[in-house]
Length: 328
Ligand code: SAM
Ligand code: SF4
Image (cartoon, rainbow, N blue to C red; front, side, top):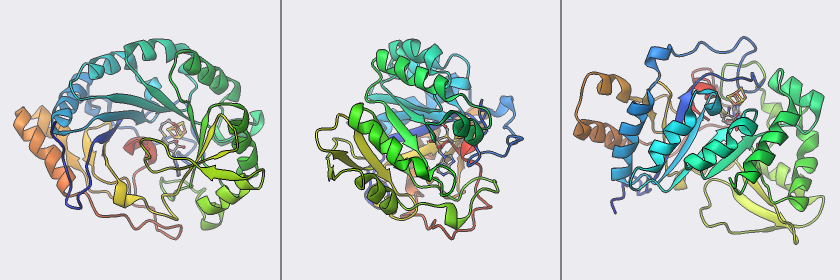
């Protein structure tokens, strides 16, 4: 089985694909209230184009795909894409990152088409606050979606929460408590200075260490090893069915173990989330190039993957594209 290594000897076997930059929410840390300027629909990769690229990526050694956006469930007939992807030799795991609002409707059909797991972004358990953070979302719908995903066997359910000081950081303990009574993996992700929003300020950022200490203030937590670690460090409370994860893109870079490539919804390969360097595969595909040339473009984006990013809580972030376009 082929494997592709970058210059720093990291195996690249994971691809995050943004299938749309559109979304049914306007989270205050991700998008301005008026939304972002969208990629013209003609420039969004078709499912056929995505499949062609993933087939070539799989031949190079990509095993795991995560579909994201924007809101991936907002793209019509996502299950058709997943079904085709699931048939590609070498692809072992397909997941999505979603805000969960449409999961109730689609969980069953997605699971049948070959989806293995879902990460649900949820930043408040409180009805009013959730509505404020997302500018209009209904938290009950998210929980209905999570329950539908559990019923469909999309396990383990991972819940991603971004603590933001003064906005929802007082809920860190409530989220941590969820793992004591459910098998959810609750993952806390550091707020990142990304996207053209006015919310970011260094004093709103909560470092992973502080989040972990606050989770541990409820009861002792102990490290757990999980087969495919990824960027999170995992812990659990004694005898708890659920797991706590801490992801620290700012305070503790995990670049040395980064195994991923990203592709934006308009078909640009992006070797690093925090670098604007992109390789335009869509234009190349639409100019009629052969698979071998697409393979060269994929290899090139692996070759130019930087050793690490230099983002910190003091970074000037204005040049970075909105997360919804890159696919967070
Ligand atoms: N709409 C889907 C969702 O919300 O899960 C997928 C796309 S969203 C851009 C992917 C992830 O990026 C979400 O978990 C979201 O919380 C995260 N995200 C967006 N802006 C962020 C920021 N400034 N800092 C940290 N995470 C961010
Ligand atoms: Fe939409 Fe996800 Fe961004 Fe929220 S975080 S606005 S749900 S893309």
